[in-house]
Length: 528
Image 1 (cartoon, rainbow, N blue to C red):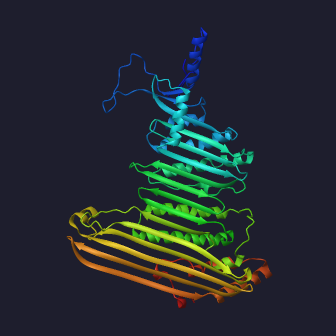
Image 2 (image 1 turned 45 degrees about the vertical axis):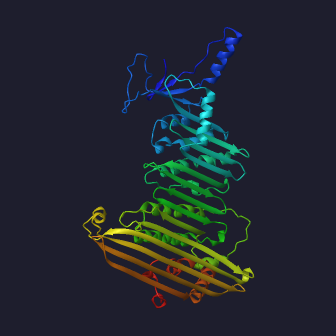
Image 3 (image 1 turned 30 degrees about the horizontal axis):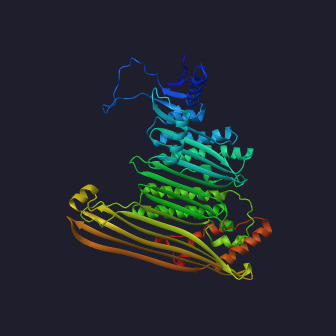
């Protein structure tokens, strides 16, 4: 009896009869070799006397069976057979990333491929046909996810998932060496995070959940690359790219709503501050992102993606890193006025909309950029200068109804609305200078400027055009403050063996953190 398991029928392997003659035996042996050994059919096989059924479009519905490229009914193959029957890409790849990683680990790091395709029931595709179809799908997928890991020993692990209309194909390849037992364990620990990243990107709207992919163990892995192209519900594609190594972390996500990019320069670990300092900087940047979204009416999902990327990629620096052999560019006390984060650049570019056909130049848009860069100069380490610049810019535009009780659709139909245009700039620059290792300069400059132009239309007639600018610039000498804090720290360390510097700096950091709202930059007399 053919075994039945949870509605899935596994057809027994096909065995050709023994040849009666040399010529007949040759042709039958070729047929047996060319026939796949495992097929999976949904439900019961149709009987020869079944009445023909038709699809909702009136065409003859052909019963399908699903044929695996390789005869291996493991968890990966079963997940593929289930996934191929779904039209939603999230369901197609459900569990496949983790299963692919775990199968490679179970194989001891030996490369393999697998694919599954739908065929009309009764078709007998050859093994060569399946192999060719699988390779073609891997090379030209409609949807794909790829992950590449470079191990500390120099081997490269490449995982790929590919989806097409009629099938799924995966591959796992190890080149440049063999995986050690520790590397296999490390790879297994990434399975859930790989799957979680795929699941998050497949959601509508997409989410970013990198997990351990963002915090690779540097003793096991030196680099990671992941990219994905996935269909969205509106038929457009989402493109995702992630690259991590010991000098940079880069993330890019492009989709129908817009683009999000984040690049971290991680070459100089001496920029990194302690945990409390770093958390304070991250919290301030997240507040700046939220403030920009609220002021420019940006897409909340895009801003959430940037926030998630910022937190997750910076979290890698919370893990102790092995010595790189590079000479630190900064002394420990240099970071007092710095953010404590790696230098970075980030941006959101929202897909513009043209909601008013009568005024096509009035676009709804949102473009936000933020960055941090640190410059170290000087004739010698004892006579060094350190400057850190943080800056942000926002350009945005959006429509609101002139009547709060009226929807935007109604407002556009009657041309009773306001058109807002936002243009904001902000920056903070901190500077330290040493002479023979003595701090001789510590200063900060904060600047923020805003302008909002609002044009109001009543029944299509321009009633008002008002611009509201605001600007603040403030510079402060912090040499006395830092000199005092360093002296208190020295005494505390000498008398009690306890560091108090970080706790004292926490209440002062608003003076040199990036601030986009002019109203929140306090003048010097307010700091006393």
